[in-house]
Image (cartoon, helix red, strand yellow):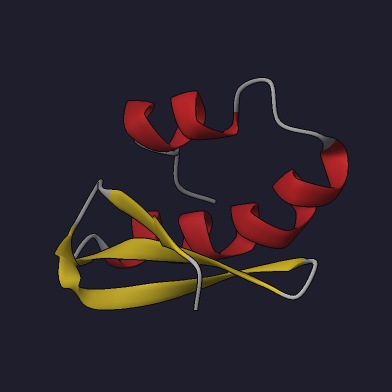
Length: 65
């Protein structure tokens, strides 16, 4: 498993376990590919993370989708 970029590790710091479990696999996928960043979206009481081709690698964006 690749090491997470420092930006990703900092993003997860202090988050609750449920949030980390939902987001970390996509951060790891991004780190493994090294090409795309991650978009985290909040919907109706849940959180989902997606690889985002429009977001530079190592960057995380958030939105209410």
